[in-house]
Image (spheres, rainbow, N blue to C red):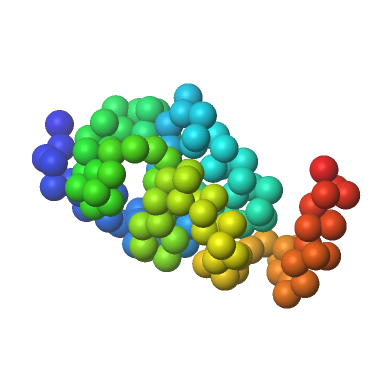
Length: 125
């Protein structure tokens, strides 16, 4: 078994090196909502499912030390912790989410005209 510092290094490496990173559990309804939201928003992101594999529990303990929260999902953008599902929604409702994730948008979603973007999504669903 690896030492606890190994998990801390692993979690910190993931956070630092992935643009948008979501820590999740496959059965968590809030995590499912967050993943669906990110997919529909059109951003490139990585998901770490903490209930898959034997490292998940230790990684979640380390994650709680880093973020200060034991709840999931947990969203990191550019190495910074932004919170869970409620915080994601709040950022979106305040109009801050688009600017936060703009560098990670897929090319089809890159636009300054949000009405056209919404129209495209609505018509393509």
